[in-house]
Image 1: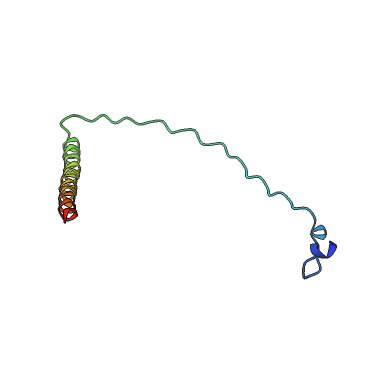
Image 2: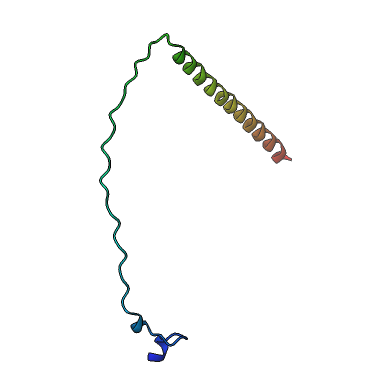
Length: 86
């Protein structure tokens, strides 16, 4: 029984002693939140017009992608149904 607990070097678990707990991390208080800054934009500013144009461009590729994906899916369904009959 005692021979089972000894390792090849002749040390036993009892000779090693108890495991020491690791040190606890220090808790730092979070910094206070920064105040929000509000920027007023005029409706006729050039930035707002480019923003709406870029949003339209972003959604246009998504619509094209969705239409192509639907068309390819329908073609695949038709081809599979035709080939499945034979």
